[in-house]
Length: 150
Image 1 (cartoon, rainbow, N blue to C red):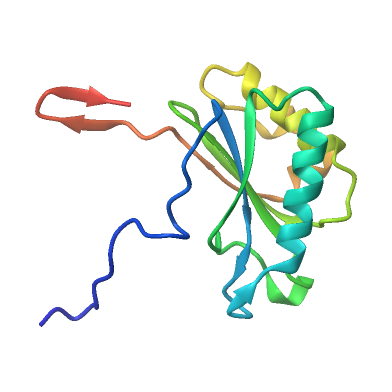
Image 2 (cartoon, rainbow, N blue to C red; image 1 turned 120 degrees about the horizontal axis):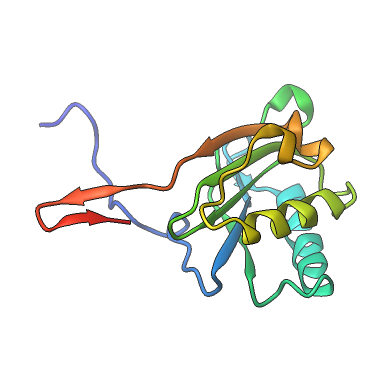
């Protein structure tokens, strides 16, 4: 028997279908509480409204997802938010308060959409996001026998 128990690889809530070119993911399940993350749900609602009001609704989908494992309980469990798109770098930011102004998140969304590969340096980020960056993950390059697949 394997030392690690197996589970299905892609099961709800880990599968998040993408219906727009870019996706913003917000934790909605808290690993610390073992329950739905109420701050995450509030942030999803506010971010969806802000994206729509900014005219970015055709470019971005805001989705809740399973725990992104980046919050710090000592900080009061502020939210973790991620941006991803096909062939672009993925970004994760932590310490995002559901009640904070949405302007920096909208500025970042516009920057992200404008970059072909989603890659930016820290100096390109809105001020409030500079100190809350958890990860900038390069776009996956998968090589198969048939050649590279992005």
